[in-house]
Image 1 (tube, rainbow, N blue to C red):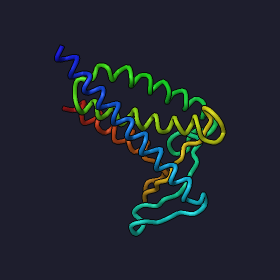
Image 2 (cartoon, rainbow, N blue to C red):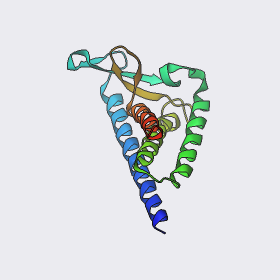
Image 3 (tube, one colour):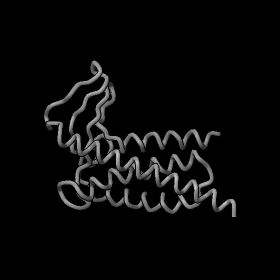
Image 4 (cartoon, rainbow, N blue to C red):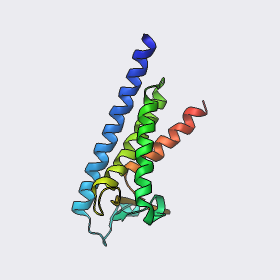
Length: 157
């Protein structure tokens, strides 16, 4: 019984993290769309961060812009797999990891479902650019990247 309760605690934590990531990502994208002009960049912190609105039809680095429907279906499958896996969580690192991955995937899938071009064909809103780092990205992408890093750390211990 104690094992089930512990597992539920981790599952709930993962879902709370996912919800928070998705909500913050959606809010940041709404602000970016409302306040950033498509062909103008805003430079902050002496060039450390540039805010630039980019509507990305493809995957990372804009790869495969004609495969938007496939990316949306893959993201939906990842969400289902993560939710199913979350029922077996037994540690905080994995709860955090799955929460970050779930929230990030949900944030980008929401764009693909509800943004212009129509369901399963919407463009993902990217708006953060770093120097010497080619892609423009968003907070959902950041959560996915951090989640992947936590997986590496969790599996190496």
